[in-house]
Each structure stands twice: as C-alpha cells, then as structure tokens.
Image (cartoon, rainbow, N blue to C red):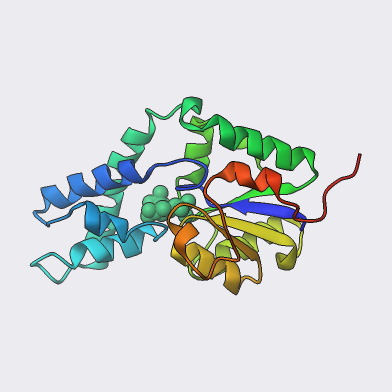
Length: 217
Ligand code: B16
Ligand code: MG
C-alpha cells in the first residue's frame, strides 16, 4: 500500500449535526417533516440526493430544477454559517497523531469526500497542509457509491488504485472503495458493514497494523 484516502465527514471530523440543523431549518421553512431518523439516511450522500430524500415527505411533489437548486443553496448557506464555529479543536488528538504517524511511515494522504465544502472545512480545522491531495464534491459528477471520488484521489496522488486504502464511515463509501479496487476500511457506521475488508473502532488502530509499503529506518 502506498496511500490512505480518508473520507472527511464521519472520519476526520463530525459535521453531521450541522448538516442536520441546516436541513431542518430549510425543511421547517417549507413545511416538510424532517427528523433525525431521516437524517441518518443522508450520511455520505450527495447534497442533491439528500434533498430528494427530504422531499419524499413533501405534499408538493413537483419541484423544478431551479427550485431544488434554491433549496440546496438555502441549506448550504445555513450549513456554512454553522461551519464558521469550527476550529482546530474539533479534530481529535488521536486523528492528528494517526495522520502524522502514517505520513512519517511514508504513506501519501488524501481526502475523498462527497462534500463541496471539504476545502472550507479543512481550512477551519487547520488540516489543509496535511493532505497531499483533496478529491471532493467539486471534482466529480457521480457521488458514492460510484468510485469516481476515490479514483480521482488516486490520480491526484499519482498512485494506482490497488495501492490505496480508503477509510470510510458510510456504507456507500465502502461500496465506492470496493468498486475502485481499493482496500476498504470501515469505521463508525461502516464498522458494522460486512463488505468492508477491515473494520476498526478508532482511527488510532491504523497505527498498529502493517499495510506494507512502509519506509524503512
Ligand atoms: P455538501 P463525506 C458528505 O461528506 C456528508 O457525509 C453528507 O452528509 C453530505 O450530504 C455530502 O458530504 C455533501 O456535502 O453539501 O457539503 O457538499 O462523508 O463524503 O465527507
Ligand atoms: Mg462520511
């Protein structure tokens, strides 16, 4: 293995509460029922697909593309307002340490996230310089479980897909990693997903395993 590709939300940092609050504010404004159970279905899912899931509960069934675009922009502006409160303290020490150890061992590190706000979040939490590449929702046309976001990360890192380990919390992300021909490591929700090649409870476990390809000396 030569590289690790990390999903962002649910692996490096936890912004699902902010996604929930922002979608809830939008849904309340247009009078559509939305709760935390429905929110669980949005994990790792693109913004457009998330909106589709929320609008399943709407009495008004026909929304034009322009209206959907506006609703997504409304949610995103609430979400970005909430992201403003994030600081480097939102990253667990264990996460920082693990990234540092993997880097010292000679692995390349990338982000593979569906989010179009990945760059902004990395800036807020002070991790911008830690990754050799950021593949995110702005670079792709197909969301997870399509492998595009991870294949793009491998391309940016200039490594072959079979040399990459993906760390993911969403089932769709594990499916995407497998479809990319990469080693899929499940954490959080995905630690209970049998399609994952390896299941871990905390990122620190990565330090205790040998993935091959480590720098000697
Ligand atoms: P945005 P990940 C995903 O991030 C989130 O888990 C998912 O809830 C969100 O809808 C998606 O990003 C798109 O985010 O609206 O910021 O573009 O887990 O792939 O890092
Ligand atoms: Mg995720």
